[in-house]
Image 1: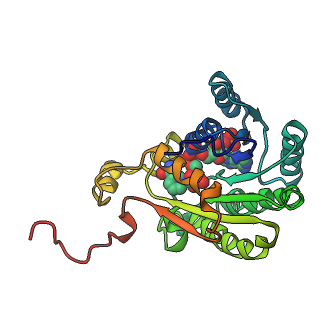
Image 2 (image 1 turned 90 degrees about the horizontal axis):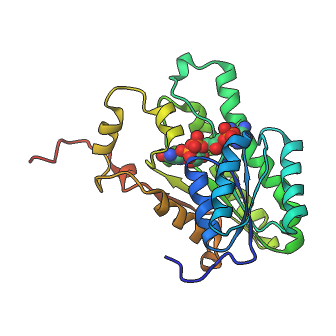
Amino acid sequence: MFKDPIFRDRVAIITGGGTGLGRAFALRFSELGARVVLASRSADHLEPACAEIRGRGGEALAAPTDVRVPEQVENMVRRTLDQYGRLDILINNAAGNFLCPAEKLSYNGWRSVIDIVLNGAFNCTRAALEPMKKQNYGRILNILATYASGASPGTVHSCAAKAGVLAMTRTLAVEWARYNIHVNAVAPGSFPTEGASSRLMLAPGAAERALRRIPVGRVGRHEELANLVAYLCSDYADYINGESVTIDGGVSWNHPSFEWENV
Ligand code: NAP
């Protein structure tokens, strides 16, 4: 999709960068010239992803971090600056989620998802501000879900957290544009990963039924999402700020009132 190494000299932190979609972003950003810092709790997730990037000739740093803990997040940013001298891009991708109707959801279950997704995204964003402000350059990209601007029966905790991150995206896009810091988001539909499938697709046949609702007839490919994220963090998207881009094969609009397919 991109001819040039659009992220040459750029440094990107990707939270949750050792697994699933975060790993796909890290590989793509590295291919496009970025030096990447992968941050999540488990070094066992981060080290293999970093090794893969280095094996392909890229530069990667593993920074074990719990995004819920501001001191650890500040340390993640400090390590990035020590190693690479700057911080250009932050991708808030780390998340936790599980299927649980609200009437069965414990206070603790609610709190833990809000803490990772909403508070974690704020902690990382807040810690990235000072270096980005000093550079007069920053691109922050939040990974939402299509339900961030709708509803998600069965995962109210994640829905509320992602909606909060969407509100943060729009608000900080206005507050921080004066520092040349742009804040955008993507709202993915179905991009199967081990994490998402094991936590959310629990009912027998759920994945097949979900697939049937997607108008384009397939789930998303990781590289399609990674290319969108890369575009939004690149100079090609300089006039996009405070936006959330949905990438879901059209499923968000598929709320059929009628059985029209066989008419
Ligand atoms: P995943 O592989 O389970 O990714 C979640 C990541 O978050 C893991 O790498 C995990 O690493 C990290 N994490 C969890 N708690 C953390 C904490 N307290 N501090 C730091 N890192 C933490 O799932 P995924 O499917 O790739 O999801 C990635 C993002 O895409 C999420 O924001 C998700 O909501 C969003 N999304 C995914 C889909 C999809 O279809 N896959 C659809 C819509 C939105 P550790 O365990 O090492 O901490």
